[in-house]
Length: 434
Image (tube, rainbow, N blue to C red; front, side, top):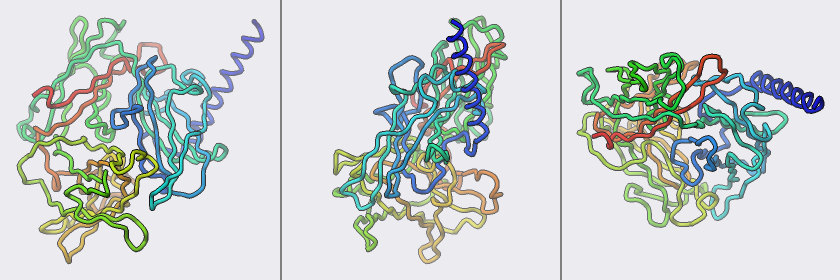
């Protein structure tokens, strides 16, 4: 018994030291981000359904899969771990031993080389949980991928959530209270039934986060209940949980090179031995009436209709995009944004103005697949030390009738406990409540 207690204590001390060391080495952000240029097409979601929200149910057998391409030629040693976070996406303070079932770090062992493609790349993938790695607590998690087990150069971070369902959620999309937002925004009201949960002080112990289209950049967080009944927390803020409706997303369909989509006006191999495509020009939709059609709500899916092995047999297509304008935006730069850009304004996805054709143009490499995106603007004089905020009002417009997905997370932190649990999860679509 003494040896067992000593071993357990030693493991806990080592785990706490490892956690402190890891947090001391943090040179990454607690958000979805890619830190090196050689990694492309990072896909993360439920296994078999990578376009869905990265959520696992605690205790279920479902898994999440991460995949990415390395366009460097040599095979590399990639290592991953996860960090348990609080509801504000900061380290929760739990030691890895307290939330990881298995080894604290694991190598990514699955990789394949591309073939039949002009662009050479190595395709890596991992699934969690697996035989060597799992999690034991609900809450927010950050998946961290390093290159080189010794030097630990961070290359990818991805958020995901683990849910232990203990409450029920009902929600609806309603018209905003503010008159000026009635035709452009969407408001989400919801109720949480916590009858099965031993909540002593719901106003303090419960909080909610609402996410639009898997976008953490504009999520509304730390929502306390507005009203309480005997077993319900009511989140009806009359103007607080409000999002721009946006517009239906534009699409780029590169699933087939042999039979190109109608919007692809040219596709061929160029002199640099790259697959190159040109899309039909697009224009602003800011003043156009809203047209409803099925889209992917900003996400993308890797799919190859010419070859069944799309992960390693797909081409990277260097795609020319032309955005025609009457006048250039004097105070703004223009960018492509979406899940493919991690919802960030990135220099490599900037479109530049060409006065000869009165258009903004950009050339971007996309792996064969189906992509949703927006054209967005960002102030040209923005502080380079701060994240740039995209706006679609001049380029896409915003409509209350736009179809969007919303995700509601309910956090629970009983008095005296050390971390935020996630006890409720709901995905809703605006068309379900119209």
